[in-house]
Amino acid sequence: MGKTTLAQLVYNDHRIKENFEHRAWVYVSETFDVIGLTKAILRSFHSSADGEVLNLLQNQLQQELIGKKYLLVLDDVWNRSEECWERLLLPLYHGSIGSKIIVTTRDKEVASAMKSIKVLNLKKLKKSECWSMFVRHAFHGRNASEYPNIESIGKKIVKKCGGLPLAIKILGNLLRRKFSPREWANILEKDVWHLSEGDGNINSVLRLSYHHLPSNLKRCFAYCSILPKGRRFDKDETIKIWMADGLLKCCRTNKSEEELGEFYLRLEGDMLQDVSERTRHIWCSLDSKD
Image: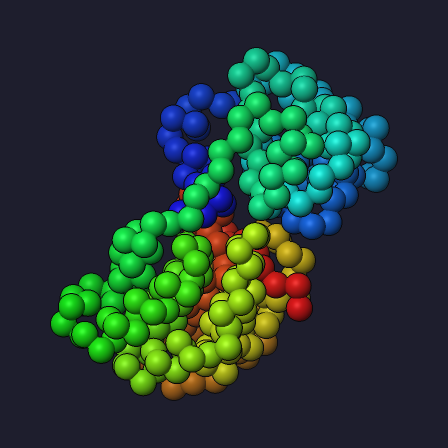
């Protein structure tokens, strides 16, 4: 389980919903813009966010939070500057007692800069946990021991994933669609195994997954890539845009265009995340700087 997945489980837990009057989730990433983040926090708390004057925006956020118990998740934070954090957090001190801020980051220095009360370091998966997760995604209900050749290759692939849950999930879903010893051996021999030991960078695995998408699905996915990183958008709206651009008329199928769009979004699930509990919204969260 990765950082964001764990935070999502906490965020969507019914006890959290009952205990906090306000909940908000904001994706941060590398670009740390105090004004932009303040506006994003306001919107996540279902408040308007107009203008570019920081003092006015912070006063608005302060008034929104006074006397209210809130939970704010800041996902994928990179900035280490204590000065930037002090400016961003000023209005957040005005919530009710018991308000909480959860931050996910790959950098321990970020936790220090934020003067975190408690830091939870997620460990990489154990060998048995890695294999169990891979079997669930790659074999998809099949008994792995009944396919000894594929099982042997799969264990070598899992070993190269370095205990990273997202890498295992992505490759597992990819290999499920290519269920043969030849295809699995081909993936094993690919020059994508450069997972950074320090920050869990899996860009190469994401790139491999993208290159193995069907050409028509690549075109649909390319649309998502033009949106800002961390952008939340509606599934139905995305499918309608694909339909309007003729991207869902490119193959012979008994499915309607709406059904085909839903199917494509499920296939793209490795690189798009559901962010609402009702799963009608998806989050463009490509982990790539290309």
